[in-house]
Image (tube, rainbow, N blue to C red; front, side, top):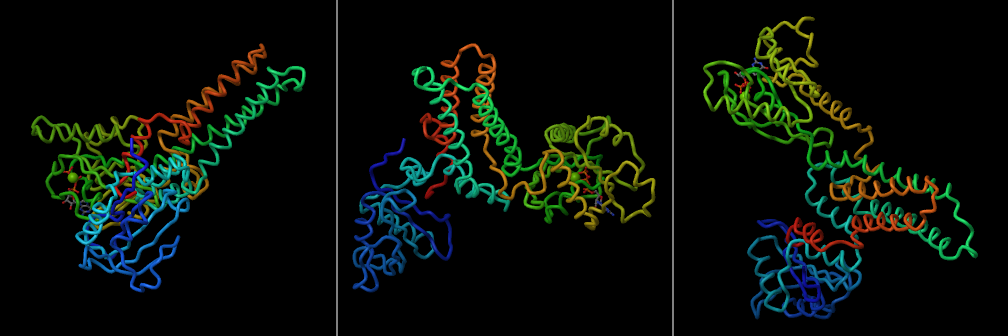
Length: 459
Ligand SMILES: Nc1nc2c(ncn2[C@@H]2O[C@H](COP(=O)(O)OP(=O)(O)OP(=O)(O)O)[C@@H](O)[C@H]2O)c(=O)[nH]1
Ligand SMILES: [Mg+2]
C-alpha cells in the first residue's frame, strides 16, 4: 500500500506537447519544496497563500527553465487535504519533466497512478464511490457517461448508501435496546420494522436495476453486422463510422476477420462489428471458413444483430440459413442497395429499413432504429442518462445485491415472528458491512489496491 507520510509529485496532464502542462506536489513538504526553485516575478508578492496564484519563474540553480503560474492550497482545503502546490508550466514534455525532476531532487517522491486520489480517499475528502467516479469521468467517451459519473462524483451514490446505512443502523438500535432493556423501552412494533425493511430493500433493488444503463454507458451496445457475402456489410460499417475502415471490393468473401468500431448515437456508445459474409460451399478456403466461425461467434455475442440483405438478389439459401441461426436474437433487418432498384412492396416485406450503404441513404433512420431497439431491450426511459439515476458499477452492483439478499433473509425472519430479534440484528449488521464496502468505510486492502491501480499517473 502507498506511504502516506511523504510528499509526492507527478505531471497531471497527458504526455506529449500541449500549450500548458500541470505538475502537482502534495504532502507536508510541498510548500517548502516549491520555494527552492520558484521565484515570483514580483518579489514583494512572493508569499505563499492558500488559493493565491503567483506568477514567476522556475530556476535550476541560476538557469531559468520556464515562466509559470503556481497555485498553493493549504491543508485541509485541497484535493488530498494535504498542503498542495500546482505548477502550470508550458506544455512541452521536456520542460515539464525537467520541473518534475526539480521536485524529486528537492525531496518529493514520484507518485504512483491514483496516489493523489488515494490520499483524498484516506483523508476523508471523498468516499470510494466518488474516487471511482473520478476515474470514470477521466475515461468517459460520451457526454452521457460524463453526466452519469459526475452525478456520482457530486455525492449522489454516497448519499443513498449513507441513507441506507443510517436507516439500518437505527433499526438495529431499536431492536437491540428492546432486547437489552425490555422494561424501559417500548416493545418492538414488528409491522413497522418490516415495512421499513421492505422500503429499504425496494430502493436497493431499484439502484441495482438502474445499473443496466450504467453498464451500457461503460461498455457500449454490441451490434454485429451479419449477412451473406457481398451484401454491403463493410460498406455499411464504413458509412456509419464515417471512415474507410474495412476493405470493400466487388468480390464475395472480402472480409475475413471481424472489425470493431465504436460510434456514438444520442450519447450512447454502440460497438459495431463487421463480419465475414456467411455462406455454405464446398470450395471455401480455410481462412474464409475461420472467418465465418468468427461471424457466428460475433452474432452470438452481440446485443443486436444488424442483418444486411442485398435487395437486388432474391432470398438465397445462405440468407435463409442466416435467418435460422439468428435464433430469436434481437435484430434489425436492413435491405441494402436501394439505389440499384425500383423499390416495391415486395422488397419491403421482411425488412425493417431500406438503405444504400454505398450512398449513405437512410442511415440516420437506421441509427434511430438502433437507438430505439437498444432502449427497448435495456428497458431505458427517454430521460435515462441525464442525472436522474445513479449508474453504479459492477463492484458496487455485486455488493448491493449481496446486501439485498441479506435483507430478503431478514424480512423472512421478521415475518416468522418467532422471537429471533438477536439474529435479525446480527444479519442487519452484515448488510451494513456490505454498504461499508461500497463506500469504502470498511474494505479489504486488496480491493482498494485493485481500484486505485486503474488510475493514471497524476490523478
Ligand atoms: N450500388 C451499390 N453497391 C453497393 C452498396 N453497398 C455495397 N455495394 C457494393 O457491393 C460490393 C460488396 O460490398 P462490401 O461492403 O464489400 O460487402 P460485404 O458484405 O462486406 O462483403 P464480404 O466482406 O465479402 O462479405 C462492393 O462492390 C460495394 O461497392 C449499395 O448500397 N449500393
Ligand atoms: Mg466485408
